[in-house]
Length: 276
Image: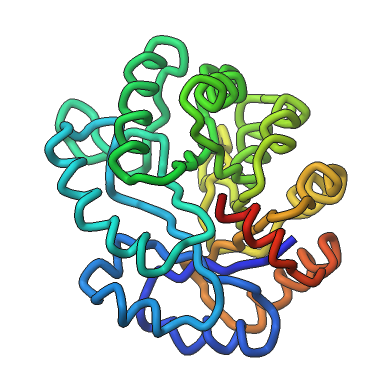
């Protein structure tokens, strides 16, 4: 298992390079939307370690085809120049009746399946590489259909899942979606996210995926209990921290992850598997 850190803002560049130099991380996940202003060659030169791409604002479920084509045209040179370990995106809604949502919105996995499948297949083809889509920290009971949705999408159009372990833990706390329902998704994918969460301020409490707290004990237990499903050739685990960014706290959480997933030498074969 390789551990990584999400690099979202330029001001954390020195910290991310330090984490890599000190051996706390093995790769960097770029929130690539934030760096499309940097020429691909310069961005490639900025990192001596492998990178993954996480897309934030394609809004591929909502945007029209021409807009997605234009976004893909801008993104493909970065894919070519940096050869990312993976390219991932958010499978969620950003707007409701034309109004921007404060938090990403979950969609109806049954009602919207055909539309989501068509959009994901189109977006993957435009990117010219395998697309991974991320699971949601469900707060509505329709989230019980999420594991089968991702499995079906994977089987029918060849997308993968960027499985977020802490999102699954949030969904379990919010709607009681059993964690074992995700086992087939974990077993059939190699790239993962994990972060801290907190409860909402008022009752009934909702677990919020904040990326601002230390890893919760139940998240650590979930990872530990399924270590053999997660830890495989080519596997990556990105630790996300977007707020309350303190170096020692981040390193402490990375050390907790490393205790579960001991560092192994990455072979040429493993690297080829990860980028396939």
